[in-house]
Length: 150
Image (cartoon, rainbow, N blue to C red):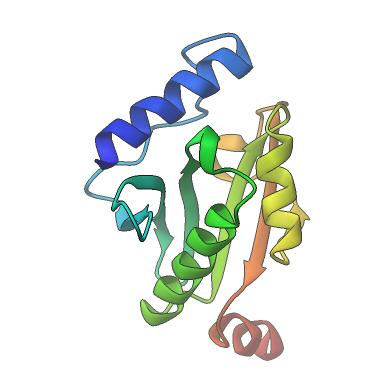
């Protein structure tokens, strides 16, 4: 199920960006993905969307591959996926989540902003990507303690 959702997402992004090569940096891998989840419709059990967290370092994760099938958009599925990812990240000990959305992904930008993510300078593989918009949100207390100590 996850592979099918990721393929649908990649096809949609290729159409939006006008190119199949739209990802800055390496795609997530089994080695760096801490969490990947699939949201299912309660009544039918059909998959509706997915999302994951990539490990950036011991205290920081990156939200990756949040995707909802077109017919299920507008029904809070993406917000629910993001909320569960934040809970998982907190349980894993992350203090901050980062995210990236391309400039043509207005829906992704709205998702992160509505969930309390703030715009930050582009990070990692997105540093020089002019079409990237990066976000971050403190989700744990370790980052606050580290900033207070410095």
